[in-house]
Length: 264
Image (cartoon, rainbow, N blue to C red; front, side, top):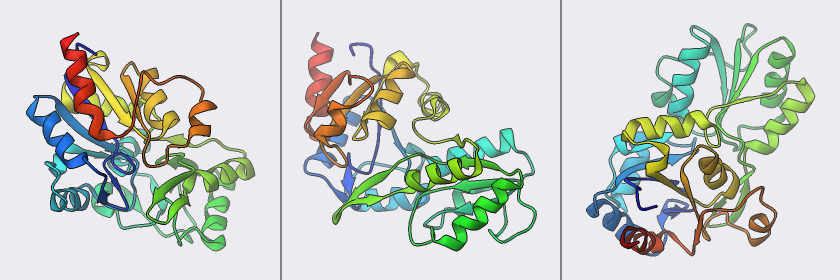
């Protein structure tokens, strides 16, 4: 912790819930920036573009710009360009993220010639017809690329089902395995570290998802900090596959943790 120069921060459940700031989060992020730490907001959110996320967060008082944000869709676009150049892709996602998928050739789910099925975040679009189209493409040999495996997320109305539940069904039915581009993919953390210009041992990750945010970051060499907000559940914490480096009540407590570590 004494060598930490940058902080990776999940958004939903850590800074906000349903895009409303959590208590103390705005002030804490300002403290982190004023202390000189590099900041990257890393999110599996697939309902908004980087620009629209920045606009919402700035409107709420967070000191954030679009270039501070790394989203699963943006990383997915880079992944597809590198691993599936020129591929015809069909996207199943809730929300308009076309701006962050620049360069990706998108076709409708009913198209006959699809090379890649891309799964984003769940919503009303994940009906039987759309999922069955995706299943058909996979049976015919299309690759399956998923932006994340999140099973649920927290809103002001409680936990809501996410794409991971549908992804598991498609994988089993089509006897295939998805290539995951967002958290917990190591490539996602590597992209964030590269953007900040720091090594894994110089960064910490703050998240509310113990597996995809915290333990995945620790496996990539970062320090992991779990917050007890957002989707955090005590039973999930107890049954997790590992132990977070640090656990704090909320993001508002992060400046204290950083200051204590610096003093040590």
